[in-house]
Image 1 (cartoon, rainbow, N blue to C red):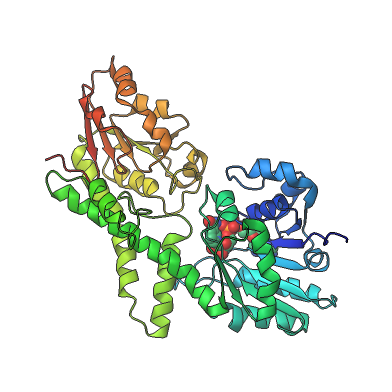
Image 2: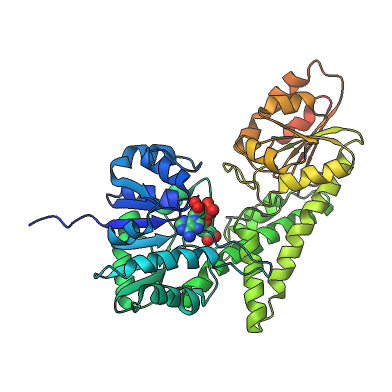
Length: 449
Ligand SMILES: NC(=O)c1ccc[n+]([C@@H]2O[C@H](COP(=O)([O-])OP(=O)(O)OC[C@H]3O[C@@H](n4cnc5c(N)ncnc54)[C@H](O)[C@@H]3O)[C@@H](O)[C@H]2O)c1
């Protein structure tokens, strides 16, 4: 018997998510055609290079490049494949809702190509949208552009990914769950084997109505942000209760399976391209539906205000006139993204308070330079920041900062007369650094009594 023909998949939008999706599909034996308006990621993929920075992506693309092609011709994405994943941006509008401008434009182009295809095609939207977007807006767009009927001539699914930048490939290959919103059973039946081929048969797969999956995606992210803020709030409690360490408290309550330990570490505010905006979008959805979403609004407000409070606390720990180095400028470790990053906000606050400010990030220095005012000197190497600073503020739990051991600090400080203040928002450093002569160490969420 002949082996079944490999699945032919197209991925529309070769950005942070789409480029990794294309690579993962190819790594599972599928033939992948990437399509993007922008020729740069297309050229990169065609040359076997990663269009975006993501750990492991360059190797995966290089290894599987014989099964990856890319184009700027949208018609090829429809005519040469059976399933198209759409992973274009859905930026936040002023109201907080997600804009469908890019998804609509992509589907108009793909729909026009569908006019001249006679066989069934499945469209899978991966971009984050709010409930109603697929059925009320995107599917009608496809039907108008193609002259075809959803459910009869083509299928439609909403399949959001739960991935974190920095671990995108691992998250694709070993997800906690697959969420599949389906227009009809046939659409879900076509999608399911693709998801199984990527992550195996054991990953829970929840098939549901489009609107349920649309809500589940933003709800999950929003729930996680509530948990983060709860942990940060505990940190603020412990700051004020003598003799307490927030890690003891959160580890204890995290033991309870109703709570769990993940995302329960007190630290800086949540940032990045997804968490803050998903929270705002859910609140806006609630407002439009007449649901009281004060809890999400309060969470957004708390998260924004926390950075200002932490900056004020850091300034209490740091002598006036000190030169401050902010360590960690990305919104989290292992990422180069600086969108809504606490480290960036802290740089602004310290500048406003009249300090000379330096910054360093193991990965995001170049991106930070783009968004920071020229008054902030971004150092490529940790040692350069250390050499110039009288105070360090650790703004992400990047493992690279653990290299600041008591021994290393003692060696660095051996011929320095001036004192060094360290403010550690994530308790990354060994508390024994406070024993190093000339070093004053303060950790968020720890009150040493
Ligand atoms: N980045 C993440 O961690 C993450 C996680 C979960 C969900 N998402 C969602 O995935 C979607 C994509 O996010 P991203 O971070 O990969 O975006 P991105 O900006 O990195 O990449 C988007 C790509 O789409 C291309 N594009 C835009 N309009 C197009 C069109 N009409 N036709 C073809 N290509 C087009 C752009 O040129 C770009 O290369 C968003 O909805 C986002 O919310 C992202």
